[in-house]
Length: 493
Image 1: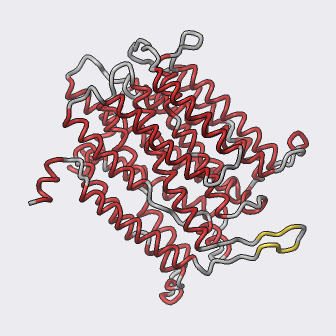
Image 2 (image 1 turned 45 degrees about the vertical axis):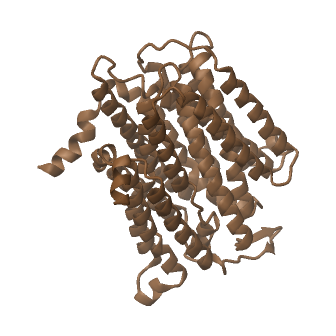
Image 3 (image 1 turned 180 degrees about the vertical axis):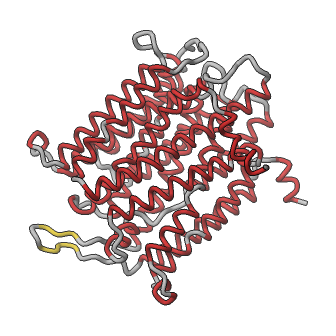
Protein backbone atom coordinates (compact mmCIF):
# COMPACT_ATOMS: atom_id res chain seq x y z
CA UNK A 1 0.00 0.00 0.00
CA UNK A 2 2.85 2.39 0.85
CA UNK A 3 4.53 1.69 -2.50
CA UNK A 4 1.27 2.42 -4.29
CA UNK A 5 0.91 5.71 -2.42
CA UNK A 6 4.46 6.72 -3.41
CA UNK A 7 3.69 5.82 -7.03
CA UNK A 8 0.56 7.95 -6.97
CA UNK A 9 2.25 11.10 -5.55
CA UNK A 10 3.11 12.69 -8.93
CA UNK A 11 -0.25 11.62 -10.41
CA UNK A 12 -2.18 13.19 -7.55
CA UNK A 13 -0.04 16.32 -7.86
CA UNK A 14 -0.78 16.75 -11.58
CA UNK A 15 -3.11 19.56 -12.62
CA UNK A 16 -4.52 20.26 -16.08
CA UNK A 17 -3.05 23.77 -15.96
CA UNK A 18 0.47 22.27 -15.77
CA UNK A 19 0.23 20.26 -19.02
CA UNK A 20 1.03 22.99 -21.61
CA UNK A 21 4.03 24.12 -19.55
CA UNK A 22 5.26 20.54 -19.22
CA UNK A 23 5.04 20.21 -23.00
CA UNK A 24 7.74 22.89 -23.30
CA UNK A 25 9.99 20.88 -21.00
CA UNK A 26 9.14 17.78 -23.02
CA UNK A 27 10.30 19.60 -26.16
CA UNK A 28 13.59 20.45 -24.47
CA UNK A 29 14.12 16.81 -23.54
CA UNK A 30 13.15 15.74 -27.05
CA UNK A 31 16.23 17.55 -28.36
CA UNK A 32 18.16 14.33 -27.56
CA UNK A 33 16.37 12.77 -30.54
CA UNK A 34 19.40 13.64 -32.68
CA UNK A 35 22.06 12.97 -30.01
CA UNK A 36 23.19 9.53 -31.18
CA UNK A 37 23.07 10.46 -34.87
CA UNK A 38 25.04 13.62 -34.12
CA UNK A 39 27.71 11.86 -32.05
CA UNK A 40 28.31 9.18 -34.67
CA UNK A 41 28.33 11.75 -37.49
CA UNK A 42 30.80 13.97 -35.61
CA UNK A 43 33.09 11.00 -35.01
CA UNK A 44 32.98 10.00 -38.69
CA UNK A 45 32.95 13.37 -40.47
CA UNK A 46 34.59 16.07 -38.34
CA UNK A 47 38.27 16.42 -37.51
CA UNK A 48 37.75 18.01 -34.08
CA UNK A 49 39.85 16.35 -31.37
CA UNK A 50 38.58 15.32 -27.93
CA UNK A 51 40.14 18.49 -26.51
CA UNK A 52 38.56 20.54 -29.33
CA UNK A 53 35.10 19.10 -28.69
CA UNK A 54 35.45 19.78 -24.97
CA UNK A 55 36.53 23.34 -25.74
CA UNK A 56 33.46 23.74 -27.95
CA UNK A 57 31.36 22.41 -25.09
CA UNK A 58 32.74 25.14 -22.83
CA UNK A 59 31.79 27.84 -25.37
CA UNK A 60 28.32 26.33 -25.73
CA UNK A 61 27.72 26.88 -22.02
CA UNK A 62 28.31 30.64 -22.46
CA UNK A 63 24.73 31.42 -23.65
CA UNK A 64 23.53 29.70 -20.48
CA UNK A 65 25.77 31.93 -18.36
CA UNK A 66 24.28 35.15 -19.81
CA UNK A 67 20.71 34.07 -19.09
CA UNK A 68 20.30 37.23 -17.01
CA UNK A 69 19.82 39.12 -20.29
CA UNK A 70 16.94 36.87 -21.27
CA UNK A 71 15.62 36.99 -17.71
CA UNK A 72 15.50 40.77 -17.82
CA UNK A 73 13.71 40.66 -21.19
CA UNK A 74 11.14 38.23 -19.79
CA UNK A 75 10.56 40.38 -16.70
CA UNK A 76 10.59 43.81 -18.31
CA UNK A 77 10.35 43.91 -22.12
CA UNK A 78 7.14 43.11 -23.99
CA UNK A 79 7.13 42.36 -27.72
CA UNK A 80 3.73 42.57 -29.43
CA UNK A 81 2.18 42.82 -25.96
CA UNK A 82 3.84 39.65 -24.64
CA UNK A 83 6.77 39.21 -22.26
CA UNK A 84 6.46 35.44 -22.00
CA UNK A 85 5.11 33.57 -25.03
CA UNK A 86 6.84 35.66 -27.69
CA UNK A 87 10.26 34.58 -26.42
CA UNK A 88 9.35 30.90 -26.77
CA UNK A 89 8.37 31.60 -30.39
CA UNK A 90 11.71 33.33 -31.01
CA UNK A 91 13.54 30.44 -29.39
CA UNK A 92 11.66 27.98 -31.62
CA UNK A 93 12.81 29.98 -34.66
CA UNK A 94 16.47 29.72 -33.61
CA UNK A 95 16.15 25.99 -32.95
CA UNK A 96 14.62 25.51 -36.41
CA UNK A 97 17.45 27.45 -38.10
CA UNK A 98 20.02 25.38 -36.20
CA UNK A 99 18.39 22.14 -37.31
CA UNK A 100 18.21 23.26 -40.95
CA UNK A 101 21.92 24.10 -40.92
CA UNK A 102 22.75 20.66 -39.53
CA UNK A 103 20.57 19.07 -42.22
CA UNK A 104 22.59 21.04 -44.76
CA UNK A 105 26.02 19.77 -43.67
CA UNK A 106 24.96 16.23 -42.81
CA UNK A 107 23.27 15.89 -46.22
CA UNK A 108 26.15 17.62 -48.07
CA UNK A 109 23.78 20.18 -49.61
CA UNK A 110 25.19 22.79 -51.99
CA UNK A 111 23.80 25.77 -50.10
CA UNK A 112 26.33 25.18 -47.29
CA UNK A 113 29.12 23.71 -49.45
CA UNK A 114 31.15 26.95 -49.43
CA UNK A 115 31.70 26.62 -45.67
CA UNK A 116 33.59 23.96 -43.76
CA UNK A 117 31.53 21.38 -41.93
CA UNK A 118 33.28 22.29 -38.68
CA UNK A 119 32.38 25.99 -38.93
CA UNK A 120 28.72 25.30 -39.81
CA UNK A 121 28.46 22.71 -37.04
CA UNK A 122 29.81 25.16 -34.46
CA UNK A 123 27.55 28.00 -35.63
CA UNK A 124 24.47 25.75 -35.74
CA UNK A 125 25.26 24.44 -32.26
CA UNK A 126 25.48 27.99 -30.87
CA UNK A 127 22.22 29.10 -32.54
CA UNK A 128 20.44 26.02 -31.21
CA UNK A 129 21.70 26.60 -27.68
CA UNK A 130 20.52 30.23 -27.76
CA UNK A 131 17.05 29.04 -28.77
CA UNK A 132 16.86 26.52 -25.94
CA UNK A 133 18.19 29.09 -23.44
CA UNK A 134 15.41 31.52 -24.34
CA UNK A 135 12.75 28.84 -23.99
CA UNK A 136 14.26 27.56 -20.75
CA UNK A 137 14.21 31.00 -19.12
CA UNK A 138 10.54 31.45 -19.98
CA UNK A 139 9.56 27.93 -18.90
CA UNK A 140 11.34 28.26 -15.55
CA UNK A 141 9.64 31.60 -14.95
CA UNK A 142 6.22 30.19 -15.81
CA UNK A 143 6.62 27.38 -13.24
CA UNK A 144 5.88 30.03 -10.60
CA UNK A 145 2.88 31.36 -12.52
CA UNK A 146 0.78 28.22 -13.06
CA UNK A 147 0.35 27.60 -9.32
CA UNK A 148 -2.88 28.29 -7.46
CA UNK A 149 -1.99 31.63 -5.85
CA UNK A 150 -5.11 31.67 -3.65
CA UNK A 151 -3.77 29.03 -1.21
CA UNK A 152 -1.53 29.45 1.85
CA UNK A 153 2.17 30.28 1.54
CA UNK A 154 3.12 26.84 2.82
CA UNK A 155 0.99 25.08 0.20
CA UNK A 156 2.34 27.38 -2.52
CA UNK A 157 5.90 26.35 -1.57
CA UNK A 158 4.93 22.66 -1.78
CA UNK A 159 3.27 23.20 -5.13
CA UNK A 160 6.33 25.03 -6.45
CA UNK A 161 8.53 22.10 -5.42
CA UNK A 162 6.07 19.66 -6.99
CA UNK A 163 6.11 21.54 -10.31
CA UNK A 164 9.91 21.33 -10.40
CA UNK A 165 9.70 17.56 -9.98
CA UNK A 166 6.98 17.29 -12.64
CA UNK A 167 9.01 19.40 -15.06
CA UNK A 168 11.98 17.05 -14.63
CA UNK A 169 9.65 14.09 -15.10
CA UNK A 170 8.43 15.61 -18.37
CA UNK A 171 12.03 16.19 -19.41
CA UNK A 172 12.94 12.64 -18.44
CA UNK A 173 9.97 11.18 -20.32
CA UNK A 174 11.12 12.96 -23.48
CA UNK A 175 14.69 11.70 -23.06
CA UNK A 176 13.36 8.20 -22.38
CA UNK A 177 11.25 8.07 -25.53
CA UNK A 178 13.06 10.34 -27.98
CA UNK A 179 16.62 9.33 -27.15
CA UNK A 180 15.81 5.69 -27.85
CA UNK A 181 13.68 6.42 -30.92
CA UNK A 182 16.29 8.72 -32.45
CA UNK A 183 19.02 6.13 -31.92
CA UNK A 184 16.97 3.36 -33.50
CA UNK A 185 16.16 5.53 -36.51
CA UNK A 186 19.83 6.52 -36.84
CA UNK A 187 20.67 2.81 -37.15
CA UNK A 188 18.01 2.30 -39.85
CA UNK A 189 17.89 5.56 -41.80
CA UNK A 190 20.42 8.22 -42.78
CA UNK A 191 21.58 10.78 -40.24
CA UNK A 192 20.06 13.47 -42.47
CA UNK A 193 16.63 11.87 -42.15
CA UNK A 194 16.92 11.88 -38.36
CA UNK A 195 17.72 15.60 -38.35
CA UNK A 196 14.80 16.32 -40.68
CA UNK A 197 12.39 14.48 -38.37
CA UNK A 198 13.74 16.47 -35.40
CA UNK A 199 12.05 19.60 -36.73
CA UNK A 200 9.07 18.48 -34.63
CA UNK A 201 10.91 19.70 -31.48
CA UNK A 202 10.26 23.46 -31.89
CA UNK A 203 6.67 22.69 -32.92
CA UNK A 204 6.02 21.04 -29.54
CA UNK A 205 7.19 24.10 -27.62
CA UNK A 206 5.06 26.37 -29.81
CA UNK A 207 1.95 24.28 -29.09
CA UNK A 208 2.64 24.28 -25.34
CA UNK A 209 3.21 28.00 -24.96
CA UNK A 210 0.26 28.86 -27.20
CA UNK A 211 -2.28 27.25 -24.84
CA UNK A 212 -0.69 27.71 -21.41
CA UNK A 213 -2.64 29.83 -18.90
CA UNK A 214 -0.69 31.91 -16.40
CA UNK A 215 -1.44 34.05 -13.37
CA UNK A 216 -1.28 37.70 -14.49
CA UNK A 217 2.09 39.22 -13.65
CA UNK A 218 2.87 42.87 -14.44
CA UNK A 219 6.14 43.83 -16.08
CA UNK A 220 8.71 45.50 -13.85
CA UNK A 221 11.16 48.28 -14.70
CA UNK A 222 14.36 47.15 -16.33
CA UNK A 223 17.17 46.65 -13.81
CA UNK A 224 19.80 48.71 -15.60
CA UNK A 225 22.69 47.29 -13.58
CA UNK A 226 21.80 43.72 -14.48
CA UNK A 227 20.65 44.30 -18.06
CA UNK A 228 23.46 46.56 -19.27
CA UNK A 229 25.98 44.64 -17.20
CA UNK A 230 24.77 41.53 -19.02
CA UNK A 231 25.03 43.29 -22.40
CA UNK A 232 28.60 44.39 -21.69
CA UNK A 233 29.46 40.90 -20.52
CA UNK A 234 28.00 39.38 -23.71
CA UNK A 235 30.02 41.82 -25.86
CA UNK A 236 33.11 41.00 -23.82
CA UNK A 237 32.62 37.26 -24.40
CA UNK A 238 32.13 37.74 -28.16
CA UNK A 239 35.22 39.95 -28.47
CA UNK A 240 37.38 37.56 -26.46
CA UNK A 241 36.18 34.52 -28.41
CA UNK A 242 36.33 36.13 -31.88
CA UNK A 243 39.88 37.44 -31.44
CA UNK A 244 41.23 34.12 -30.21
CA UNK A 245 42.72 35.63 -27.03
CA UNK A 246 45.05 33.25 -25.16
CA UNK A 247 43.29 31.52 -22.27
CA UNK A 248 40.01 33.03 -23.51
CA UNK A 249 37.85 30.32 -21.94
CA UNK A 250 39.52 30.72 -18.57
CA UNK A 251 39.13 34.50 -18.72
CA UNK A 252 35.45 34.22 -19.67
CA UNK A 253 34.88 31.70 -16.86
CA UNK A 254 36.45 33.95 -14.19
CA UNK A 255 34.70 37.11 -15.38
CA UNK A 256 31.31 35.40 -15.79
CA UNK A 257 31.52 33.93 -12.30
CA UNK A 258 32.26 37.36 -10.83
CA UNK A 259 29.50 39.06 -12.83
CA UNK A 260 26.82 36.53 -11.94
CA UNK A 261 27.73 36.46 -8.23
CA UNK A 262 27.60 40.26 -8.13
CA UNK A 263 24.17 40.30 -9.79
CA UNK A 264 22.82 37.61 -7.46
CA UNK A 265 24.04 39.71 -4.54
CA UNK A 266 21.98 42.65 -5.86
CA UNK A 267 18.83 40.54 -6.05
CA UNK A 268 19.10 38.90 -2.61
CA UNK A 269 20.21 41.94 -0.61
CA UNK A 270 16.64 42.56 0.63
CA UNK A 271 16.24 39.03 2.06
CA UNK A 272 16.83 38.22 5.72
CA UNK A 273 20.28 37.06 6.87
CA UNK A 274 19.32 33.40 7.48
CA UNK A 275 17.76 33.08 4.02
CA UNK A 276 20.81 34.64 2.37
CA UNK A 277 23.11 32.25 4.23
CA UNK A 278 21.01 29.25 3.23
CA UNK A 279 21.04 30.30 -0.43
CA UNK A 280 24.81 30.91 -0.41
CA UNK A 281 25.64 27.58 1.19
CA UNK A 282 23.32 25.73 -1.18
CA UNK A 283 24.87 27.47 -4.19
CA UNK A 284 28.37 26.45 -3.09
CA UNK A 285 27.64 22.74 -2.62
CA UNK A 286 25.58 22.40 -5.80
CA UNK A 287 28.18 24.38 -7.77
CA UNK A 288 31.00 22.09 -6.70
CA UNK A 289 28.90 18.98 -7.33
CA UNK A 290 28.17 20.10 -10.91
CA UNK A 291 31.74 21.31 -11.56
CA UNK A 292 33.35 17.87 -11.33
CA UNK A 293 35.25 16.84 -14.49
CA UNK A 294 34.22 14.12 -16.92
CA UNK A 295 36.32 11.84 -19.12
CA UNK A 296 35.08 13.53 -22.29
CA UNK A 297 34.07 12.17 -25.72
CA UNK A 298 36.98 9.73 -25.84
CA UNK A 299 35.10 7.35 -23.53
CA UNK A 300 32.33 6.95 -26.10
CA UNK A 301 34.89 6.63 -28.90
CA UNK A 302 36.55 3.81 -26.97
CA UNK A 303 33.19 2.09 -26.46
CA UNK A 304 32.52 2.32 -30.20
CA UNK A 305 36.00 1.22 -31.35
CA UNK A 306 36.98 -1.32 -28.70
CA UNK A 307 33.66 -2.64 -27.36
CA UNK A 308 31.80 -2.49 -30.69
CA UNK A 309 28.84 -0.44 -29.44
CA UNK A 310 26.77 0.81 -32.40
CA UNK A 311 23.87 3.24 -32.88
CA UNK A 312 21.24 0.62 -32.04
CA UNK A 313 22.96 -0.31 -28.79
CA UNK A 314 23.37 3.32 -27.75
CA UNK A 315 19.65 3.67 -28.48
CA UNK A 316 18.96 0.83 -26.02
CA UNK A 317 21.17 2.53 -23.44
CA UNK A 318 19.21 5.73 -23.96
CA UNK A 319 15.91 3.88 -23.61
CA UNK A 320 16.94 2.11 -20.41
CA UNK A 321 18.67 5.17 -18.96
CA UNK A 322 15.75 7.47 -19.71
CA UNK A 323 13.20 4.98 -18.44
CA UNK A 324 14.99 4.30 -15.17
CA UNK A 325 15.67 8.02 -14.70
CA UNK A 326 11.97 8.68 -15.18
CA UNK A 327 11.03 5.97 -12.68
CA UNK A 328 13.70 7.18 -10.25
CA UNK A 329 12.42 10.74 -10.39
CA UNK A 330 8.85 9.48 -10.06
CA UNK A 331 9.45 7.43 -6.92
CA UNK A 332 11.91 9.88 -5.36
CA UNK A 333 9.59 12.89 -5.67
CA UNK A 334 8.77 12.96 -1.95
CA UNK A 335 12.38 12.19 -1.02
CA UNK A 336 13.63 15.19 -3.02
CA UNK A 337 11.09 17.60 -1.60
CA UNK A 338 11.48 16.49 2.04
CA UNK A 339 15.27 15.96 2.42
CA UNK A 340 18.01 18.55 2.94
CA UNK A 341 20.26 19.45 0.00
CA UNK A 342 23.36 18.20 1.82
CA UNK A 343 21.94 14.74 2.49
CA UNK A 344 20.70 14.28 -1.06
CA UNK A 345 24.00 15.35 -2.65
CA UNK A 346 26.08 13.11 -0.36
CA UNK A 347 23.86 10.21 -1.38
CA UNK A 348 24.20 11.12 -5.08
CA UNK A 349 27.99 11.46 -4.82
CA UNK A 350 28.49 8.08 -3.15
CA UNK A 351 26.16 6.24 -5.52
CA UNK A 352 27.61 7.99 -8.58
CA UNK A 353 31.13 6.98 -7.54
CA UNK A 354 30.16 3.34 -7.05
CA UNK A 355 28.47 3.26 -10.43
CA UNK A 356 31.62 4.52 -12.17
CA UNK A 357 33.55 1.35 -11.39
CA UNK A 358 31.91 -1.00 -13.94
CA UNK A 359 33.22 1.11 -16.86
CA UNK A 360 36.64 1.22 -15.21
CA UNK A 361 36.56 -2.57 -14.82
CA UNK A 362 35.73 -3.00 -18.51
CA UNK A 363 38.75 -0.91 -19.51
CA UNK A 364 40.95 -3.43 -17.68
CA UNK A 365 39.08 -6.37 -19.32
CA UNK A 366 37.80 -7.66 -15.98
CA UNK A 367 34.49 -8.48 -17.68
CA UNK A 368 36.36 -10.89 -19.98
CA UNK A 369 37.99 -12.60 -17.00
CA UNK A 370 34.55 -13.04 -15.46
CA UNK A 371 32.99 -14.16 -18.74
CA UNK A 372 30.49 -11.29 -18.81
CA UNK A 373 29.59 -9.51 -22.02
CA UNK A 374 30.51 -5.79 -22.09
CA UNK A 375 27.05 -4.86 -23.35
CA UNK A 376 25.42 -6.56 -20.36
CA UNK A 377 27.55 -4.52 -17.95
CA UNK A 378 26.83 -1.30 -19.84
CA UNK A 379 23.08 -1.98 -19.77
CA UNK A 380 23.01 -2.72 -16.04
CA UNK A 381 25.29 0.21 -15.19
CA UNK A 382 23.19 2.63 -17.24
CA UNK A 383 20.02 1.37 -15.59
CA UNK A 384 21.42 1.93 -12.11
CA UNK A 385 23.10 5.28 -12.78
CA UNK A 386 20.40 7.12 -14.71
CA UNK A 387 18.15 8.76 -12.07
CA UNK A 388 20.81 10.68 -10.21
CA UNK A 389 21.79 13.50 -12.57
CA UNK A 390 18.20 14.75 -12.68
CA UNK A 391 17.79 14.94 -8.92
CA UNK A 392 20.56 17.53 -8.41
CA UNK A 393 18.87 19.81 -10.93
CA UNK A 394 15.53 19.57 -9.15
CA UNK A 395 17.14 20.59 -5.85
CA UNK A 396 18.36 23.85 -7.34
CA UNK A 397 15.14 24.58 -9.20
CA UNK A 398 13.10 24.05 -6.04
CA UNK A 399 15.32 26.40 -4.05
CA UNK A 400 15.09 29.03 -6.79
CA UNK A 401 11.30 28.78 -7.10
CA UNK A 402 10.72 29.14 -3.36
CA UNK A 403 12.80 32.31 -3.05
CA UNK A 404 11.92 33.92 -6.41
CA UNK A 405 11.16 37.63 -5.73
CA UNK A 406 7.88 38.92 -7.16
CA UNK A 407 8.31 40.81 -10.42
CA UNK A 408 11.90 39.57 -10.80
CA UNK A 409 11.31 35.85 -11.26
CA UNK A 410 12.68 35.64 -14.79
CA UNK A 411 15.92 37.36 -13.78
CA UNK A 412 16.17 35.30 -10.58
CA UNK A 413 15.79 31.97 -12.39
CA UNK A 414 18.18 33.12 -15.11
CA UNK A 415 20.92 34.20 -12.71
CA UNK A 416 20.78 31.04 -10.62
CA UNK A 417 20.73 28.90 -13.75
CA UNK A 418 23.66 30.94 -15.09
CA UNK A 419 25.61 30.11 -11.94
CA UNK A 420 24.91 26.42 -12.33
CA UNK A 421 25.94 26.52 -15.97
CA UNK A 422 29.14 28.30 -15.03
CA UNK A 423 29.73 25.23 -12.86
CA UNK A 424 29.37 23.14 -16.02
CA UNK A 425 31.91 25.44 -17.69
CA UNK A 426 34.27 24.67 -14.81
CA UNK A 427 33.62 20.98 -15.41
CA UNK A 428 34.40 21.43 -19.11
CA UNK A 429 37.62 23.31 -18.39
CA UNK A 430 38.79 20.68 -15.92
CA UNK A 431 37.94 17.96 -18.44
CA UNK A 432 39.79 19.86 -21.18
CA UNK A 433 42.95 20.13 -19.08
CA UNK A 434 42.81 16.48 -18.19
CA UNK A 435 42.53 15.66 -21.89
CA UNK A 436 45.56 17.89 -22.55
CA UNK A 437 47.57 15.85 -20.07
CA UNK A 438 46.19 12.46 -21.08
CA UNK A 439 45.83 12.67 -24.86
CA UNK A 440 43.21 10.28 -26.23
CA UNK A 441 42.52 10.11 -29.97
CA UNK A 442 40.13 8.30 -32.29
CA UNK A 443 41.22 7.15 -35.73
CA UNK A 444 40.87 9.94 -38.30
CA UNK A 445 41.14 9.22 -42.02
CA UNK A 446 41.63 11.69 -44.85
CA UNK A 447 41.08 10.43 -48.39
CA UNK A 448 41.26 6.89 -47.07
CA UNK A 449 44.60 7.44 -45.33
CA UNK A 450 44.91 7.32 -41.53
CA UNK A 451 46.23 10.73 -40.44
CA UNK A 452 45.58 10.20 -36.69
CA UNK A 453 45.72 6.70 -35.19
CA UNK A 454 43.44 5.63 -32.34
CA UNK A 455 45.08 5.88 -28.92
CA UNK A 456 43.26 5.02 -25.67
CA UNK A 457 46.32 4.02 -23.61
CA UNK A 458 45.74 6.64 -20.89
CA UNK A 459 41.98 6.16 -20.59
CA UNK A 460 42.37 4.02 -17.45
CA UNK A 461 44.34 6.59 -15.44
CA UNK A 462 41.98 9.34 -16.62
CA UNK A 463 39.01 7.32 -15.36
CA UNK A 464 40.70 6.86 -11.98
CA UNK A 465 41.36 10.60 -11.63
CA UNK A 466 37.83 11.61 -12.65
CA UNK A 467 36.27 9.11 -10.23
CA UNK A 468 38.54 10.14 -7.33
CA UNK A 469 38.09 13.89 -7.77
CA UNK A 470 34.34 13.47 -8.30
CA UNK A 471 34.05 11.75 -4.92
CA UNK A 472 36.45 13.64 -2.65
CA UNK A 473 35.73 17.27 -3.55
CA UNK A 474 31.90 17.17 -3.26
CA UNK A 475 32.02 15.29 0.06
CA UNK A 476 34.51 17.77 1.56
CA UNK A 477 32.50 20.73 0.28
CA UNK A 478 29.20 19.43 1.68
CA UNK A 479 30.87 18.75 5.04
CA UNK A 480 32.27 22.30 5.14
CA UNK A 481 29.31 24.23 3.66
CA UNK A 482 26.22 22.26 4.66
CA UNK A 483 23.29 24.59 3.76
CA UNK A 484 21.02 23.12 6.43
CA UNK A 485 21.98 24.76 9.75
CA UNK A 486 20.48 21.93 11.79
CA UNK A 487 22.50 19.33 9.93
CA UNK A 488 25.60 21.50 10.31
CA UNK A 489 25.15 21.65 14.07
CA UNK A 490 24.85 17.86 14.23
CA UNK A 491 28.04 17.44 12.20
CA UNK A 492 29.99 19.75 14.53
CA UNK A 493 28.94 17.92 17.72
